[in-house]
Length: 189
Image 1 (cartoon, rainbow, N blue to C red):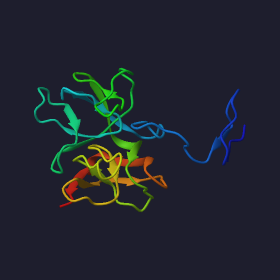
Image 2: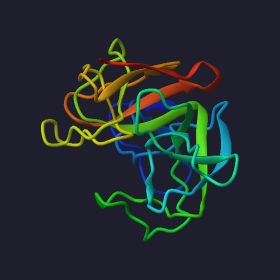
Image 3: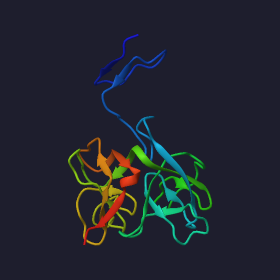
Image 4: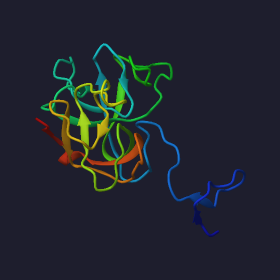
């Protein structure tokens, strides 16, 4: 059976043999494909829900060695992105975003392609920046752990080891490729 790619959505029913050219809907933290992804187990010991799609870092105040939390400073040690897993579908953070409850296991993607929220339009040539401090009052959706391209003094950091593999025309979901061994932060000061 031949596989074709078109600009329209595939048909329902039977074996799908036609696919859209682009991913048309995704959720924060959702894997883009089943390629060579690297996922590690971490524990949320923050006392709060850690939202899917957030950049997570080592939680030095955790009681176990594999404790992780949402980024809170530009000098944090990056472990990856909290992958969408539906451990508890009722868990939401203070901004009503679904995520992993306190004392539950997180599946953290350190290598692969994942859907993340960008607070502004990005394309394949844009810098990858992450908000470590809330900037939502100025730029809607610019909360800690989410992404953008524009430097905001003392609120963003460049994420090395990452690149955009899709684009958005405004704020929304974009695909981000990360390469675990090379993930590091450089503060925008």
